[in-house]
Amino acid sequence: PKFRIFSLVALSAGLFYFVVFHLLPSADIYVRPRRETINQTINVFLTQTGATLDPTSTVRKMPLIPITIHMAHSMTFDHISKQFIGTSAHTEITIENKSSQPYSLRVGTRFMNQAGMIFNILDPANIPAGGELTVRAKAADEDLYGQIIGARGNLPAGVHWDIPGLAPSERTQVYGINKTPATGGTTAYKTVLAKSDLDLAKALFEKELLAIAKQQVADELTKRNNADPAKHLQIMQSGKLTKLSFSGVTLPVDELGKQVSSITVTGTIDYTAYGYDAEAILQLLKTQLEEHTREGRKLIEDHLGLADLVIQPIQWDDGFAWIKITVDLTGTQEYILDPLTPDGALFDKSVRDQVTGMDRDEAERIIKNMPEVERVDITQWPFWSRKLPDIPSHISIIPE
Image 1 (tube, rainbow, N blue to C red):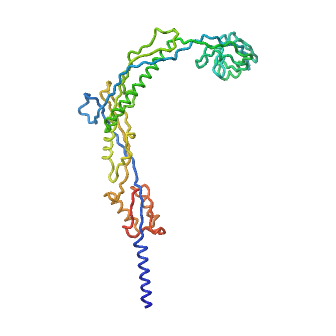
Image 2 (image 1 turned 45 degrees about the vertical axis):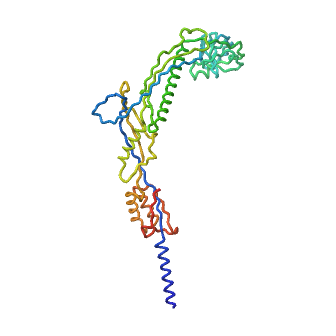
Image 3 (image 1 turned 90 degrees about the horizontal axis):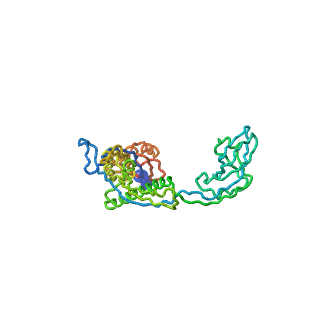
């Protein structure tokens, strides 16, 4: 009986050890497939209806879609030049010469303070070396920034005045200070139309007209895309690939020199931008990338969108009957590790063959060095074991 009992205990212990340490251990190997970039570049002719090309050309052709805007517009321009009719402030400026040589300043020499106000001296000035001289000065009509000075010229005493006509190094040696307040300045002006006003009005009018035309092109593009979701029209992003002409721009030249508060500018614009179906180009490039995807890898569709297209015009007809573009698309391909696929099944078998029964750290090193793997992580049961199961079927390969 004792022998039987000891035999039964030994058999049970052996069976327990065999089950726990041989049949039950399992491991999950999580692998992240390695990814690689893949690039495809093609040339495409965008052609308008009726455009003729070299019949022997093998370059792909797609429609070029002109979008033309013809629009008349008017604009009110009220930035009319101001003519000063007030009185200018007067003061006396004491010119100090800290240098070792005399300075001579003629009538009308400009003195400027930190605020950009300009005063002109009314007397000639010969300042001896190391001396000073007081002269009369009168405020200019406008400051450095083109703003009327007028009453702003009534400055308190003690203002520092630089001489813009001198070199920066000399301004620290020769400068002016008004020791008495400036008085007598009043602000009054009238708006008188000048030639520069007409030039500015025309420039602003054409800029505004072009901005409106571009917005109408964008609205038309949105309208067409909403009408046909299968397409996605985009505009050639190049100022060289547009047609632009202004006509009938009318400026009130007969008002030159007259006192006006505003003028009206009218004119017409003809603006043509050229569009293309970006979605069709994207699908073409996707097909090209799929054809060039290497064996054992798959193309990741999520990484291919319209924003990834790089389109560059390289040649065009003078009348834009056709535009030749080069299109570049960069995608991402990754190794196929899904065990339900033929390539994944081969990878699954290769991993099991190499790591079955191996130490976990060594197994991680081997798997990570495989060209298909970016990252690997191994979990196993029992958790204290450092060795992978001896039965290959107890090892699961799980792609992340």
